[in-house]
Amino acid sequence: MRKAFKDHEAISENKDFVPRSASDPNFTKGLPAESIRRLKASGILNQDGSIRMDTAERLGWTKVWEERERAKSQTSAVRAGIP
Image (tube, rainbow, N blue to C red; front, side):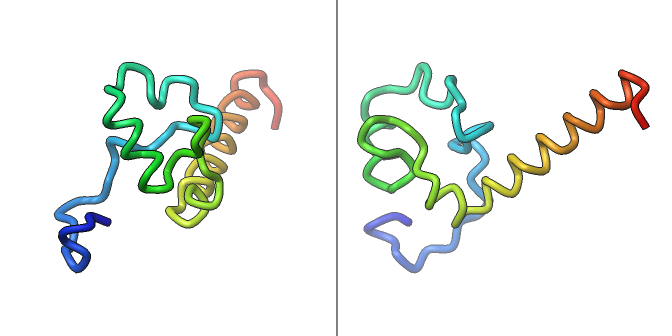
């Protein structure tokens, strides 16, 4: 939510600042300090830079991560010939 525009509807869903997993080592890699500060201020990151799991849960990221892992496991099983 933007402080100056609390009632503003986003044009599209945020897909740029979404970590690939709870421990995504590249999530903040290359971001300027101000972007990291804003991710912390908005509650996406903890002060130590780790991902806030309560925020990830609220935004539905944990479900996406679980589905991605499930699909990856199924693909690995198929490649290994496991029914």
